[in-house]
Amino acid sequence: MSSYEIPAEGRNYCLFERRGVYDTETQFHSAVEIIIVNEGKVSATINGRQISAGKGCGIFIDGFSLHSYHESEKSDAYILLGDKKYFDNFFLSLKNKVLPETFKFNNTELIKSLYDNYLKLSSDENLKKQFFAGAVNVILSAISSDNPPIEKEPDRQSDLMCEILKYAAENIESDLSLKNLGYYFGYSEGHLSRLIHRFLNENWTQYVNRLRVKKADGLISQGKDVKISDVAFAVGFENLNSFYRAYKKEFGKNPKINQ
Image (cartoon, rainbow, N blue to C red; front, top):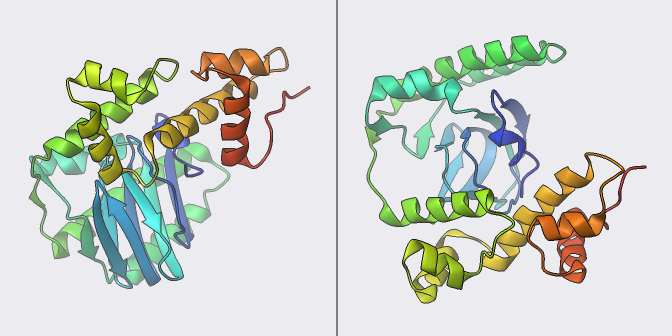
C-alpha cells in the first residue's frame, strides 16, 4: 500500500510531488491521479491493463481505479493526486468523456513553473490547496488540448471489482472470505477468484490483511489506552498471531502502543 493511499481518501487532500515512481502494491482510492514523466519511463497496471509512459508523456488514473506501478527503469516524474472535487468542474465540462489513460505532454516549462511555485507555499496548507486547484485546471486544459478526451466505455468487471473493494473497506471487521463475498454479490467463489487475480498483484487474503493492519495502525496511534488484542479483533483478525505476522509484513516491525 502506498504512503498516500489512506490520506488520499481525506476530504480536500492534495499532493504535488516530483520524484521517481517506484513499485507499489495495488492502490484503490477515490482521488484522481496524474503522472507526468520528466525522464525515464513509468509502467503501471490500471484495472488489469498494462500501460507505460516515457519522457514527454503521462498517465491519467480516475478515482476508484485499481492501479499499481512497476519500476521497469529509473524515472523522474511530476505526481498530482487530489480529492475528486479539484477535478469535478473540468470533468463536468466533458460530460461523459474522460482523458485517455496515457497522453502526450511536452510543456515541461509549464509543469516545472507550477511545481516550483507550489513548493513556495509549503508552509501554508490553505494556500497550497487553492494553488493546487488552479494548477490542476491548467494542467488538465493543457493535456486535453493535445489529447482529445474519449468516451468512457462501460467495464462491468472493473465496476464489480470496485464494488468489492468498496465493500471490503466499509466492512473491514466482517468475514471477507470469497465464500461470503460470493453470497453477497451473487457470484461463485471461482468467478471472484479469477476476477481478483486479474486486477490485484496479490491474493485476496494478502490484500484484506493490508487493509486491516492499516486500519489497526490508525487505531493504535490514537492513544495509550488501546489494547493490541482489542484492535486486532476489531479490524477482523481471528487470532493475534495472524495479526502480528500481517502487521510486521506491512510495516517491518511489531505494533507498539505509544506511552
